[in-house]
Image: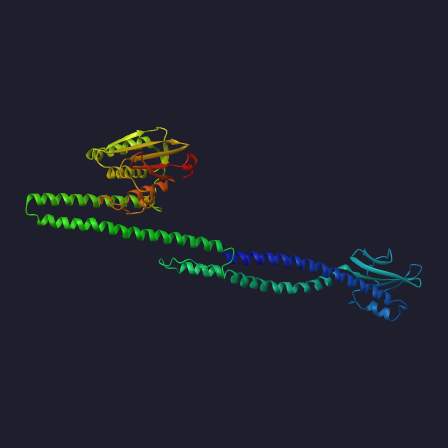
Length: 439
């Protein structure tokens, strides 16, 4: 049984049954004790009522009344029996006056004896008769308990159902929600025990709203950014069709290829950002040597650096600089940093990459002597598709957004600073070894 209502009703009914049985047993025992007290009182009253009797006539009538539960016996001062209501039945001997419990061959008796004017009067009753009468009287007191038990179970069911109704209403509200209905649930009337569930659901809905809004913004921005290069490609295709000379066709073809490269770069950046977004399927972390990673990325960008006569090199490498991370994602992060540095560093400029360990934290750094980023814009440059005024239109505006997404996934800190003289320095600081292990 997985029903809370069923479990509560069963548990409460069982508890009430146990309590009622204990109460019934106590009542039964008390009723039996009270009945025995009353029977003792009757014995005493009968014995006292027999004083001053001649034990003739009425005594003979008592002797012939077989349905009479009490047995009467009288002795004279010499110990001779002068009267017995059951002369042919074994009767208990009197050992003392007052109340006593005596046994005979056949059964046990409850006896009350007194002396009056030299005569001893004893009234006895079989304890089996007393027990039967006492049990009957006590069982009558249990009847209300037996009658009330089903009623109590029904009342428990109704009360539990009423108290669980807010949970039922909440479950119905959740079940009937449409995918578009992301408004928070109200906690009005919700029991305190269920309030944390409502709070958690509302937090989940809030995160879902934020995620969906990010996706909508991303799709809208991507559509906007792709529309421009695709429109340019369409225009350049038209110019290529209308070209009348080899020179015009060559120029139009060059513009078309450049537009294709820009569109391909934008699509690649969008895919890279989507792969590293929160909620995307992520690869397991493994140990990464930043020194080896830097050598690979520098080698990949060597041709682009040579084309712009930029001095791209490694200024410092620490072989001990290793982290736990996603190798492909870290390669994308470093490639974007180096690509941005090469894109905005003027010809004959310089771009240096390095990695090391400082105060127990591993870091990697890309520094250039380009135009740099003003301090007031350093937060906005991480926004998607953001371009500073006067910035070249060849970029997608996604490079640093991708860098931030990957850094956040690795719990790393991004620091922007000025290179000595001019330019920009981007340093990524990774958490300590213990925190990386917990990731």
